[in-house]
Amino acid sequence: MLQGPIRDVDPEVARLIELEATRQQQTLRLIPSENYASAAVLAATASAFANKYSEGYPGKRYYQGQGHVDVLENLAIDRAKALFGAEHANVQPYSGSPANLAVYFGLLQQGDTILSMSLPHGGHLTHGWKITISGKFYNAVQYGVRREDQRIDFDQVAELARAHKPKLIVCGASAYPRIIDFARFKAIADEVGALLLADIAHISGLIAGGAHPSPFPHADVVSSTTHKTLRGPRGGLIMCKAAHAGAIDRAVFPGLQGGPHENAIAGLAVALAEANTPDFRTYAAAVVRNAQVLAEGLLHHGFDLVSGGTDNHLLLVDLTNKGVRGKVAAQALERAGIICNANSVPFDPRKPFDPSGIRLGTPALTTRGLGEDAMRTLADWIAAVVASPDDAQLLEKIAAEVADLCAGHPAPALN
Ligand SMILES: *Cc1c(COP(=O)(O)O)cnc(C)c1O
Image (tube, rainbow, N blue to C red):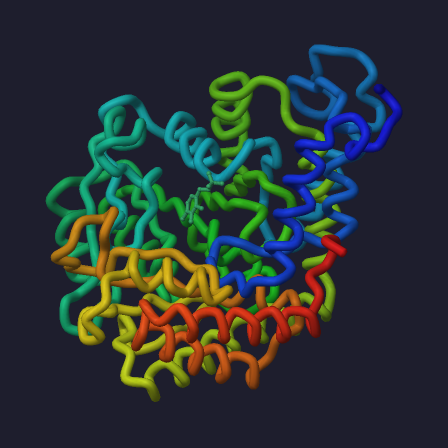
């Protein structure tokens, strides 16, 4: 049992893995937070490092047997610092959400005020949304986008900052298709004596690849996931100025977490090396270009895009003018082999569980080598599905065409 392949030891789980791999192979994944990690990243993640406990930090551990772990974790730290130009990096956060919680825990006292983007305008749950620990333990004041152009309302950010004197301003988003002006956030933070956290969970790969401006040197602290555009294993990452290194490290461990997932850190080290290549710069540029071509195609079909288009890897489509709810569209698209998620749009009159829009992103498709022609075809398919979401025959026909396109562009590490 300890040696056999998974299909002998646990055929039930083996079958689910195969089915999921086939699904990921045969459908177009447009969820902007998803990607395909490389075979090397997945191999590192499923390595012997999964078996090791290493509470503490390199050179300061609570268990023996850390010779290789320490070298590995230092390698990941050095690669993160070099890739992003950061003074300090902590590679231990289990994911993006605990990374943000560790930042708050390290820099704030319970009840302190943070100023952040609201969830319905594109922010993340962990930026102080009321039902989360970040909203219950801290006093979150929230900014949003302007009604006219659906871009971040910096007048509002500045006004709220002056009125509420937050200890921390949070910028970065999960559903915002435009460039984040980190320098402008920093100027407001400086004016009111706040620290600036840039949460680059979605765009860290674009930043690493030079396709989005960097939060350094503006932000005091930068948090990220490692599995979105950065194309690493599932995990989190915090980088900061040297002045905050001690507070951040203590907040991650022992403040919030126990033993780090050194196997994920191994995968991250590999992903950071991959991201520090000319190929990855080409990839990051192609992600943005693909999103823009997809946007042009959708505009051509009369779709209403939040902010009118995109500067990054994602689009938010407001389906109100099409008379179709986001959920209905997302479900019909899934039947046609196109996987996305329903999403609120700014000032959405509908409820978050039944919102007016869908969110589309190009990181995963670009990893598969799909280019501009495919984006134009995709826009045509999406338009056809949204026009006739109940036409079973049409959905089936498109699903077959999607599977054909996918067969010509195999996903890495799933073959
Ligand atoms: C995805 C995301 C997170 C949370 O990451 P998880 O790994 O899902 O916990 C945090 N912040 C932003 C902006 C995100 O998009």
